[in-house]
Image 1 (tube, rainbow, N blue to C red):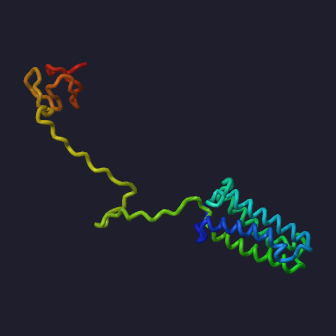
Image 2: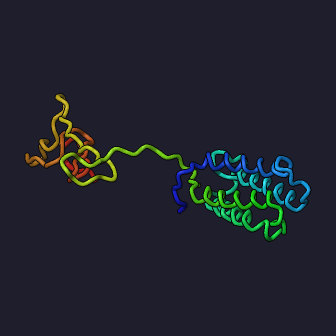
Image 3: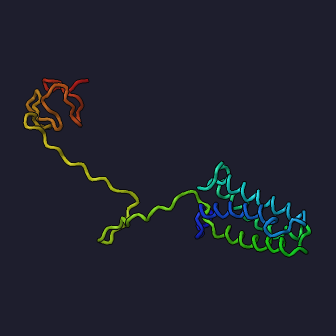
Length: 194
């Protein structure tokens, strides 16, 4: 399970879009277009940021393909690659692109660690179901017990119907086709049907 960081997924997605645009514009704004490798790396990293943001299942995603765990993993890998890129690609001697990649890599790793990659919205806390008397908390509501319904005035109550021998059988009534809980259906003459 992913950690619940302080940065909401929507904010993290917006930061990804901004980082992508900033990296694509950086060679021209920061004037390191003379270094071809650094310029190409910055543009590629900008595109990667934009693709990650657009394919995320988060609220800012457009295609909604990357699951939160995969997105978190790719963000961490991207942060590590940003730190390593100036040394691996050979532009560590050029201070401007080197510093851009190093600072962004460290900041992006912190953003990745502090991001909340879940898709669920946080719901307000439910009220405490614990009774005031200090009883045990219930996981689900307990249904109210059924209430007894008195028989209607024009119908005799069950258990008072006479049988051919003059005895009353519990749970039987005199009505034709009525059902006694212990004895089954009863005919009009009080005998049990098969």
